[in-house]
Length: 391
Ligand code: SF4
Ligand code: SF4
Image (cartoon, rainbow, N blue to C red; front, side, top):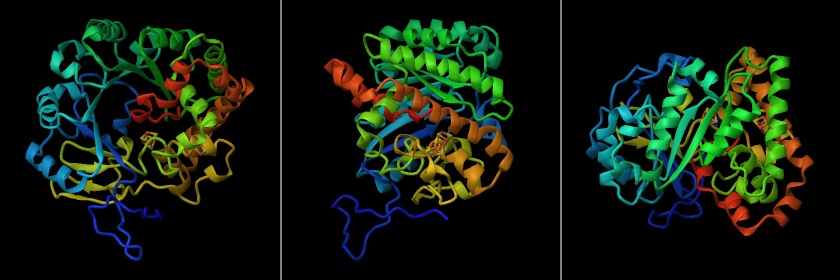
């Protein structure tokens, strides 16, 4: 059973000690992840929206901007809102992106894209994006294997073409699927983009003993380079774990101690038909419905920590905080033993390994020696707000 979050919202709402309001959003910020369409111009083999046949199941947004406006006024007016345009491939509905940017000039905006249409975005959209998350799978051979021939070069070419017109940051979002993904490939992405965020794929058959050893060897090289680098080696999961180990309150402050991917506290995934879910990978699960833009209702996220999840007994809990809730829910609440054995437990093993590799380098001593600009970026990097932080 999920536990409702009780807290005291902004003073404009009348609340007494004996009569707390159950708030739908925890904290002061909310990420509005607007799925502009569920169609996509690629057919990536592992697409997470393929589960439950979500991808392609709806076209473009079917609610009007005025309906969204009424929802924002009723539920989000007390919060700092930032918007992520998501899909499908969100740039296939450019008119909607422009409309939202025009209506909410004080919001922050981010785009999650496969990068193939980036070069067609107008300057006034590019210059208004705080961050672009661009999906890529590693090097050319692996990316083209998952996404189609020529896609890697097209993405890199497009990224270079718009670089000067982009005021925000460029983050490579890597779904780490292949056991052949090398240190050199991820290192190359770190020098091409401002940041690299990688996440272990939720794919059965991926985590054989040999594949685990290969992934661990790459993790060791990445962590070694992080601590040997002169400046900040901008690999988000390593940055985030180091930050959480050095400054533990940073791991909890935006999430009230819950998962850093925000699904239990302050992210709303709005499907093109207006239905709202906390996790973009669980939009096919009826019990995960959290609200509806058209019917104008919202409740607390149903995707919450559960006593059956193993995190309280895990060495990584103080800095991992239970990512990913979807995996933990399926494996430990729904008791999908196969998924637990083949996906969830191996990923947790890799997360714990990453933490131990970082500890080998004494992160506190490293932080104490680091120049002020490195410390500041490690502490305050805005990209932490746009990704799950944990791999
Ligand atoms: S590594 Fe796994 S079990 Fe440990 S805290 Fe993270 S999600 Fe929970
Ligand atoms: S990390 Fe969070 S947002 Fe990502 S799939 Fe897991 S629960 Fe969903």
